[in-house]
Image 1 (cartoon, rainbow over the protein chains, first blue to last red):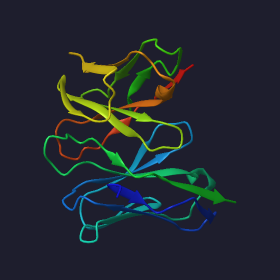
Image 2: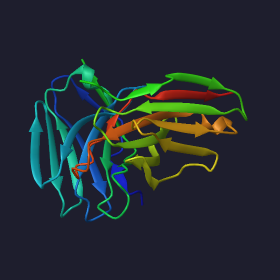
Image 3: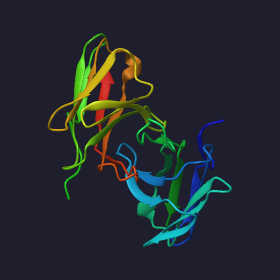
Length: 114
Length: 114
């Protein structure tokens, strides 16, 4: 089982809809969780960080974390065509000597159609 | 705001040649990470440095080596290049030990081995 898994894509939503992206992780003691957006051929861009159970909102983005279920999600409200990209869930190790190297999920390709 | 700088942005090499990729982290960032991303794959961690010392090592081939210099920039040296080394290489940097492990990625170097 991959350490970080994302819901299989691709995901297609109409403009203005809510896009829901999901991620599960295997390390029960993980403390930090990140969502990156990556346009084709470009570098990953950090869009959300979440560390505590519950919701964290930033503009049209909401991250949700449930440590008991080892589950983190990203909601994009009022989706725009410019949101079309690959979304990567990333988790650093919980401790030890692995200073923050990120393990990524396989990514979910989101397409927002007009 | 200043971002991570990588050079060169594109590099074409032949098999068995060597290549050197450079990374300049965001000012005051002391930790540098290298990732490799093949076509259609998620980024894979190669190696990281904290305060000029190697802090973690991932799936980096023995043909590759890296170091971090006194000004915190880092170089990834790749020798005996193989066709399979063709990929995007990203450098990321993070703030001093604030336990958030938020990593900011550079634009990447696209390496093509022919």
